[in-house]
Every structure is written in structure tokens, then in C-alpha cells.
Length: 259
Image (cartoon, rainbow, N blue to C red):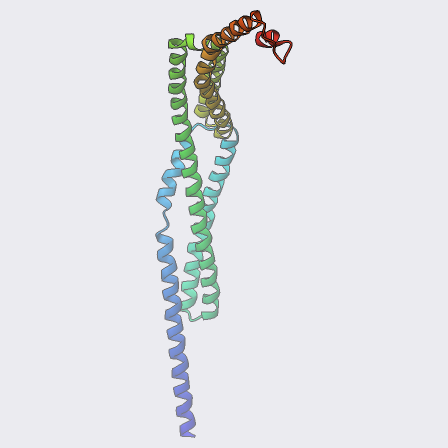
């Protein structure tokens, strides 16, 4: 009987020791999660959101930012407090040796931490992308203005190289400058969705104009100087040979040269 009693005591000690070990394991897990919670870069996100709020935005970009701010509010007012409450509840359960409840709350806290980390990363990425697009569009406005100034200088300085096409080129350049003014307006308003669409078309049309400005001078030179001289030489040769009695397989050689 005494041996049975001793065995029960030993078993109880072993069970109690196991409970203590498991309790400490759970508490360490909870401490790790709480440390990760405290390391979340909320201050950096707060600063970034404050910067976004100062930007003048319209159109679809404004809609996107409003969704972003809604997610940020939900993170700040719901997700973070819930995570803290879950950790506090789990810690309290562990200290009361309610290990099954602690384990359940630990799992909830782990899930909440992961969701919160993902939400912060997503919001940070969205804000960074918005700021980059804003900077890129402002830089594109200046770059296009500089490019159009250079193209206009080229057309003014070398207009003799373009012949009758100079009027069309200047008209095309004027249209691009007007479109760039519209692009600047959309950028200053913060409607980056529409601005991006217009920028893509502007870049395409600008490349086309640059190609024409490069390709037309040699073509015009051929039409103005080289081709007329070659045609004149052909006409003289045809007239001379015809006067000497030469016959051609084509009866309308003279007409073909004229054409």
C-alpha cells in the first residue's frame, strides 16, 4: 500500500513537472509573439500615411488611397488591439494553468500576428508605389518639356532640311506639347491612373515624331537634289539614244521616266 502511495506521489510530481514545463514553453512562445508585435514598424507606417494624406489626389488614384486609408484604420483600431488582447488573454490563461485555452489563444495570436505583418507590408508597398509613381510622373513632365524644347530648336534651326513637311512636324510637336500640359495637370491633381495612360501614349507619339525628324532629311534630300539629277540624266540619255535611232523594248520609255 505504501509503495502504491509513493508511486502516486511520484506520478503526480511528474505530471506537475510536465505541466510546468509546458506552461513555460507556452509563455516563451507568447513572449516571442509579443516581442514581434512590439517590433512592428507602426511608426514608419504612420509617417508614410501622413505623407499620403498631404498629397492632392483625384480620380481612381484617390479611390485607391481611400481604400488604403480604410485598411490602415482597420489595422490601427482593430487588428493591433485584438492581437494585444489575445496575447494578454493567453498569458493570463497560462498563469492559471488553463493550458488548453492558452494553446488555443496562442494559435489565434500567431494567426493575428501573421495577418498584421502581411497588412503592414502590403500597406507599406502600396504607399511606396504611390510615392514612386508620383515622383516618376513629375520627372516625366520635366523630361518631356526638355525634349520638346530641343525638338523645336532642331526644327527651327534646320527647317530647310524638311521641305514642305516642316509644317506637319511643327503641328505634331504642338499637339504633343498640349498633351504634355494635360499630363502635367493630371499629375499635379494626383490622378495618376489617367496620367499613366496619357504618359504611355505621349511616349509612343514622341518616339514616332523623333523618328520622322531623323528620317525625313535624307528622304527630302533625295527628292530635292539626287533624284531630280538622276531623272535628268536618264531623260538626256534616253533623248540622245532615241535621236541616234536606238529602240527600247518598252515603247513608253519616255513616259516611264517622266512618271
